Length: 119
Image (cartoon, rainbow, N blue to C red; front, side, top):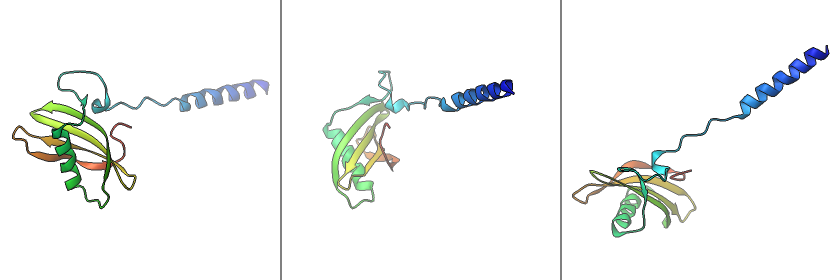
């Protein structure tokens, strides 16, 4: 009887321990801080970033005004990708990618999604 209780207790502990271990969620290449050619880099506000933010706000269907730009990351490709995280006056946080081609045309590359850019 004691052996059955001990075996049951050990089995329960083993199952609980395995269930508690969660695999690490992979980090998006955009959110990694490794410097690599063609990779994403944290960016400062520049006139080009400002125009990318304006393009994003023009395309978003929101009545709330821009409160702040929380984060910008850039990627140089055949032009430049701008990954932008913004906060609106209503407290919502959104992120999207704006692409600027070599002719300096700005366009939305990924539709704005609610939430942080790099959670």
